[in-house]
Image (cartoon, rainbow, N blue to C red; front, side, top):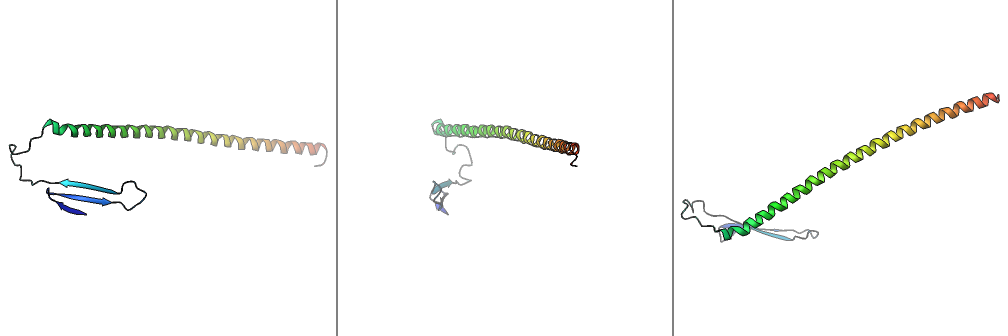
Length: 126
């Protein structure tokens, strides 16, 4: 919902009706000035360093937090890559172990069958 603000801008209000979310309402103001208002530099408003210091601090904090988030994402990507390699390695070992187990079972079965055949032939039952 946008409504005209007396400071020549717009004010927006968003309301969240979802009860699960902790933020229920956000109000944002956007100020606009007349593009022809400051055509030359003499009439432009002067910004002092005391005005810009809080903004610079907030910008620095924002940059630090963004870098922190990016570093955390890089760390998580590297960790995910290592975990994926570990999982692939374990899966390959399990696969090889199952192939060896099946091979051993087949060899043992063959040996048992040949032994039993020889035993029964020796006893003249076969």
